[in-house]
Length: 202
Figure 1 (cartoon, rainbow, N blue to C red):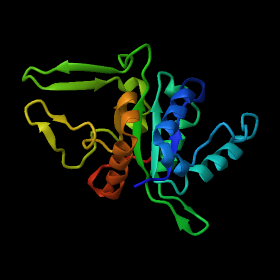
Figure 2 (cartoon, one colour):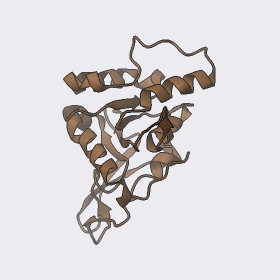
Figure 3 (cartoon, rainbow, N blue to C red):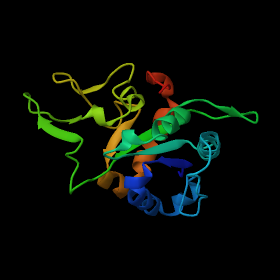
Figure 4 (tube, one colour):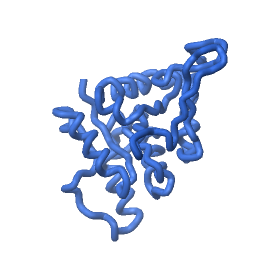
């Protein structure tokens, strides 16, 4: 089932991936509520005007897609967009629900090594680590935050990439190959949000 989506991304380095995501959404792109090439240029307007415009886009969506790019944390807006997506906001007597959120890791220089490291643990399990210094605290706080963790391996305490965190991080190629899978996963977690320790503050 199609969900209303918003894409949060750093324009200067992730515009092409934003466009690729819209292409991959196919007919479901009609439910996309974020900016496009036809959106007005707000560069020279006030911070309050930009925020109000973003609020209009995000309110009423159910899934926020965050493009994880190398200089993500230099953005003035992305952490605020995530915070707004996670909060329940009342506007004109209509209260939004907390969005599901999925992070899409951008492929750079042919791979994901700029942020992802894969390793084999001493018990033979494959796992990955993410360089959390490249992420906002609001993303890190919403990873590995299932109230009752379900380990895929009790020995090395690994968790499922998609279900062990409220904000899952998936690689660009995987996401583009099956957008509905990852969007639905994010939405489904928002339906059982009480099972996670959610952080909604920047």
